[in-house]
Length: 182
Image 1 (tube, helix red, strand yellow):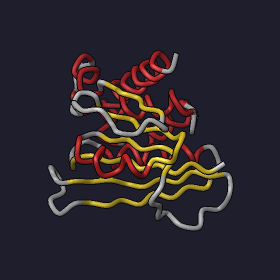
Image 2 (image 1 turned 120 degrees about the horizontal axis):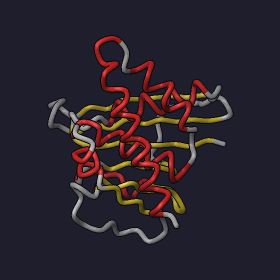
Image 3 (image 1 turned 60 degrees about the vertical axis):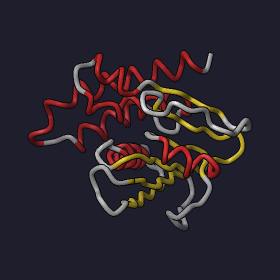
Image 4 (image 1 turned 30 degrees about the horizontal axis):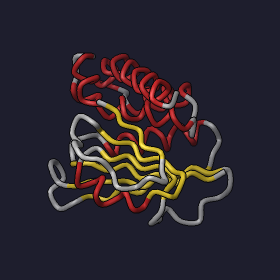
């Protein structure tokens, strides 16, 4: 099975980290993985997205114009990438920032109040991990144990103090997705 994903938002919202962690989790599970970043002109505050492909087969190219799973952390990302979701695929929306409805009716929409949950956890910077948890909870594209291992590898050194709050954020996101899909 092959899953193509696009994570998109403003620079500084952690979209690259989401892509890196899910890619690393895929590798931990023995999958074939590609990760390709794309930055807008400004870095922080500009647009940013990354494409991730996780597959049981070798991946021919990281480039895709269609995806089974898209995460939009802001309105410009929703506007740009909503048409790219495969019919029957998933569009994850940061409900804290996106105040409009998508146009598509042939896809699964998962709205996640990422910023509010991150704020409840005491660290607004973990909004991306809330969203990543929702992706895992709704799709099972990788398992949570692999995500935690990837998180621990990525947040090493001086960032180890942030591992626990990030894990809590992921678990909250999984819970949101499971409750949404009932």
